[in-house]
Amino acid sequence: MTQALRHDAMRARNLALVLGAVGARGSVTRAALAEMTGLTKTTVSKLVGDLIEGGLVVETGAVRDGERGRPGVEIRISGQRVAALGLEINVDYLAVCVVDLARTVRLRRTQAVDNRAAPPVDVIARLGDLASAVVDEAVEKGLRVVGGVLAVPGPVDMISGVVHNAPNLGWRDVPLASLLRFPFPVRVENEANLAALGELWFGSGLPDFLHVSGEIGIGAGLVVRGRLFRGARGFAGELGHVVVSPAGPPCRCGGRGCLEQYAGQDALLTAARAATSVRAATSVRPAADTPPAGASRNVPAGIPHEDAAESAGAAHEGPAEAAGAARETPPPEMLLPAQQGVSWMLSRLREGDENARAACERAAWALGVALSSAVNLVDPDAIVLGGIYAPLFPWIGHMVADTLKARLGQMRGAVPPVVVSRLGAEAAALGAAGQVIEQVMADPAALLHT
Image (tube, rainbow, N blue to C red; front, side, top):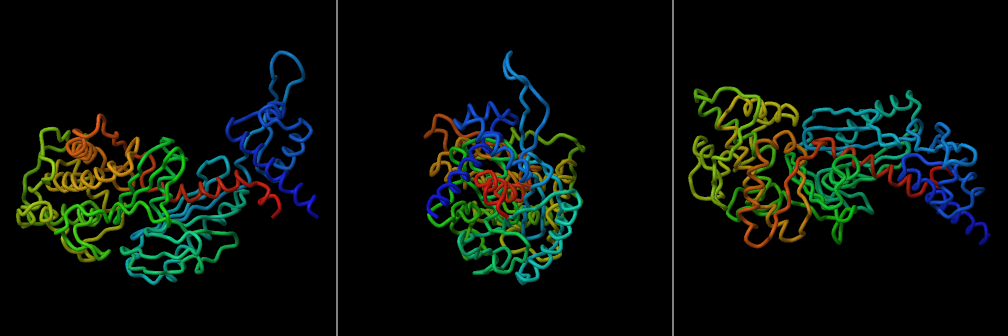
């Protein structure tokens, strides 16, 4: 019995070794695999045969290794049979994607829906319906979905799957994992962490960076040497609740002056819309397809832009008051689903609307203040702005960078560059699917036994 267990463990280790080598090289012959792994050619051939049978790798054309000997047959990761499911619950949308083992996105669906204060069981039911339809489509394409990960906007206990506190959803201590009903294992994890992993695996591929997810809430994921930093209890990255001003507006988390109240989606859109309503007849600059450079607006460090706040009737009393209309939770009729809200904001910015521009610059200033604390604490190589900050980057990137430089320049020889995510709002769902793929790559034997 002991010998059998040792054999199984050795086979599992070798399967992972061979599959990892194929994934690292893209395509490789059996002979090259034997050389790379140190395994015998006979062992490699047997392992490759098992991986082919399980749909994890596939043979391609013949190639010649060097000038002598018979041509070899190249092996590569197969994207035709095994796939992963990425799921996301956010405040105003649900998202699902299917990614095959070759990391190609095969299906993606997003549903705009207001999940604020909705019972978790109802949200999970809607997500289940959306996911079931997508999984059925995947099966029709010949794919086998072997697992999934669900991204949620709040701290998650990685062992129990309990969402401890998602203030923007109104959830507290929700045993979310126990509510999931899928024919394959599905785990629950924090949205910001998964967005950072999505950027790592599907985006820039930078090995060291801080990824900022801008939605109604604001989260961050820290990647160090290609690995996610979770913190002692997995709760690291709550950037949205870093205090920008202690006397600032109340936050859903119970604190005051949190970054979310200055730079979250609700705060940003409400400030722009309220100012636009007050100044409906305001003149705007000629429409332009390119965003304003913003270089002429030099704002002293620690002083937010006040022009939009003044338009909305806010008092000029420092950073706490500069949020203007974002001081309280906006009424439901002023809230839009993520895609519609950002689209409206972008249209105003492209038309040269000063209120929209000022709202963006104020949000960017607050983001820069919070990030300066994060940089001092964790020293990332780069800062990647994702979520709604990706499409808004041309209007906020320069202010975030300028604020960082103003606050950190004297202490540091160089400030981390601020770059835009190529994935935007899709990062979390992609990171969720990517975790399943990483698990298959690390332990293919577990999949072959099922």
